[in-house]
Length: 237
Image (tube, rainbow, N blue to C red; front, side, top):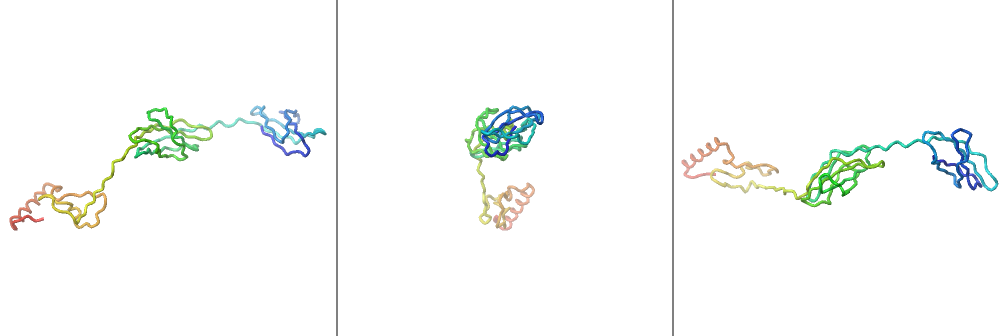
């Protein structure tokens, strides 16, 4: 129970008095400052207090009476462990993400190189629900858990998630210039898909005339070319 009051002029100290009955206070302490913390109380019991000032000339009358009832603090809120932890490896890094825990002020990201722990490495304590761990080595598998933290304490571990960082396979882009195509065999022609296309878009596939045609169309093309050879004595593109 914490008591405070206004200082009395010329006082050198104060007598603190208490009772569980109004008007029946007895002295429990003497202090030199206008405050006192009464720790010898029972939760749920009402206490009555008065204070008197004193100096070398004697003691003042009692102050006005006050009362208060101490109560036990509420039990701490148990934090739920974060859920949905996922880990994804990149080049020299692991990307982590998880679902927030209600009441969490921050999170502890913990790591091990052994499945199931112990998770002896505290990687970071972010206040958001994602983190990029760059303190990893490629080709090593890492196992992670996350806990929620607030003023009441720390939750249990989340589910475990693992990832192995490493160099990603490089993306390869093939650029075809439609103005520089040529026949590559008597039956297969290059990039007729791009014919007349001066601004081909990325991620297109391309076919080859003849080789990619259905069998019936290849037979028709073959017959037409034979007719051309018969009439003109030569092949034409």
